Structure formats: structure tokens, C-alpha cells
Image 1: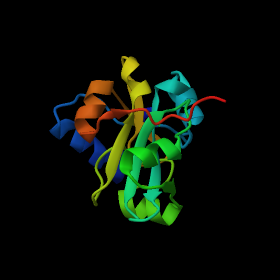
Image 2 (image 1 turned 180 degrees about the horizontal axis):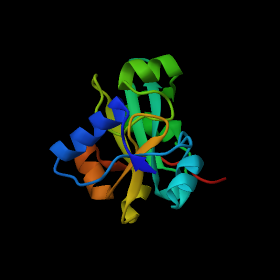
Image 3 (image 1 turned 45 degrees about the horizontal axis):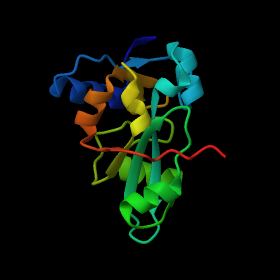
Length: 163
């Protein structure tokens, strides 16, 4: 683990500083694209990873980012019900265009376009979570309250229920 040097990760660090947060963006020599990879690199539980899942409104085409627990799957039906339209997974081109980030490095804030953000209520119960910082090997820590403040999103039930 080392301090961030990638320009995109440094932009996230600047946004954290501007928001008055002391979390340090760090980079790893190994990928942190998936929640499991990130947790292994950081040394935390997979659930403590605040992963950003990008969806696309089926009718409107609008981008939706669901910031979810790393050990959970997002329920597209629940997200659709919250938004009032069906949603589906976004492809890599859409993710990049909508968020400015590549899949595996989508930060929970800092988008160049209007993006609807939902927060998985399951993240609220951790003292600290880790989120992607714009690249597939950069992350940063923050509290769930700080994450909510940065995103401006409400806590929602977005997790796929176990069978």
C-alpha cells in the first residue's frame, strides 16, 4: 500500500480534502477491482467494501449508482421500485461515460454528469468502510456517515434477499 499517484485517484483525494475529510487514498500493486480483491489487499471484511454498482434505467437511460456492501448482491427489482422504472446492468462504455470511471474503480461520488445514487442501508453498521478511488487499484477509508454526506444519498434496502 502506498499513497495515491494516479491523476484520477488524486482527484478523489482532493475532493475528500475539500469536504474536510482526512481519509487517505492509497494504491496497491495488486488489483482491487472486486470486493474480495479489495478486502484481501486492505485486510478487512468483504462486507466493509463499499462497492459501486452502476445500473441503467431501462426507459430513461439514466445512470444509477448503488453503493452496496461488498458481500451483497444488488436487487435490481428493489432499485427499480425505488426509482419508479426498471433498471438493468450497465456495460463498460456506459459506466465510463456516466461516471467518468472504469468498472472496478467507480468511486461513490465525483461524477461529471448527473447520477442518481442509492446507499445500501447495510453499510451503516460499520465503523469504517473502504470505497474505490477512481482506479482499479486505489481505495480510501471513511465512515458510513461521511459516505452519506459525500453522496447526498439516503439509506435504502437494495440488497437481494437470500433464497
